[in-house]
Image (tube, rainbow, N blue to C red):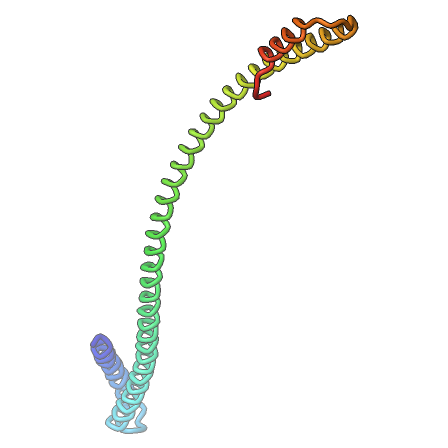
Length: 184
């Protein structure tokens, strides 16, 4: 619509300009005495008509090229928008999935941290118990070792004195049973 209005208004201006020029040329031709004024006006109007048609055609070609560019660009941009919207949807779905995974992994990490705390507490308690048991064992072992050494020394002394005592053997057996537990 704007092209028609613009072209029509432009043609009116061009015609007005040519009419003024034609009038000027008419006055000049009358003064020169050559071609008749009517012929001169007809020539000028024909020139204006040709020039107007040429400019109109150039504008139509230029507008057609511009319209084709706009149509092509519109189709291309619509396709790009559609692809971008699909990509946005895909990325939003991926973000949702990742957020769910993060939430799940966060809960798992919290549970594992809790387990680690429990295990570290158990380790400390077990280590303390083991240390106490080890100290008890060391004390018992020292006691047994001292007892065995004493008995060995006593046996050696008794063997040196190599005489028979009925009562000594039974006492030695009794002391040995008292000092050495059955499971050792």
